[in-house]
Length: 321
Image 1 (cartoon, rainbow, N blue to C red):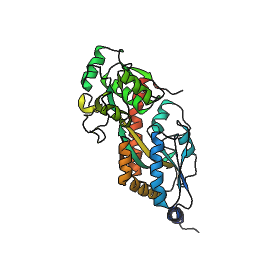
Image 2: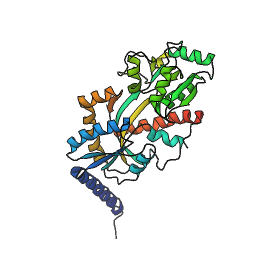
Image 3: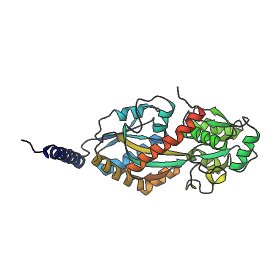
Image 4: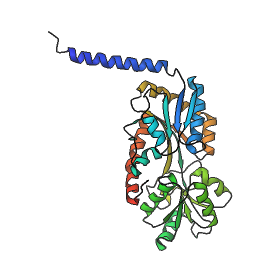
């Protein structure tokens, strides 16, 4: 007759075996090249992914290849369906978790990915045409309320950081500013400089060169605290909209089910890469601050951002066809 304790003991043995196997995988990891899937070559995702891949190649002793795919849901779809063994990673930004709030996607950003670490964060900068008679966030709010629907803001693709930053501003300030869509940030900035558009929320990397030459007038950064990439500017939150925050957040993810020892190894090595002075300096020149941190911190950020931005996206009626 079997003991009543046999089943629990069997369970503990099975759990111990699984943990032992996971540990063994991690000890032998990696045994072949890895790939980091991201969006098309030349964009912000690609530039950062390549810098991390170079450092990770040296740290792991295996080639880490950047696999560029068209932007949108394709990179996330590929990684969500990859084998959960640590050899296929995703480098992406807010679009990974805000995209499903605006369209149907073949993956769930919480269920189908195992966060590894936050790579970088970067603020947008609220800038206006130099001829616009405002010099502060409150001044812009007052002008927009006095002239509802008469001011325009430039935005690149639906759901881009400059788009959502503007919509969050509109919602919190309760103002009507009309979106004018562009194929990219550069054409929007050109029209802002020319005076055809009055307002824009470009990334710090795109805005700072024009701020330095005096071609646009900066009002504030969208981070909750002052940013080292634009230290002289106040925050939107401290200039008339308490609680306002909009950041570009970049992170690295593995497929869900990737063994925790492998996630931990990847986390340690990538955080070391991000801490390297040459990497921090390169990202800083792009208007980004390196972060690092634990998988749990990135997971919590994804959940909180989805909850917060879902309200803005729904209120603004933002949908991607």
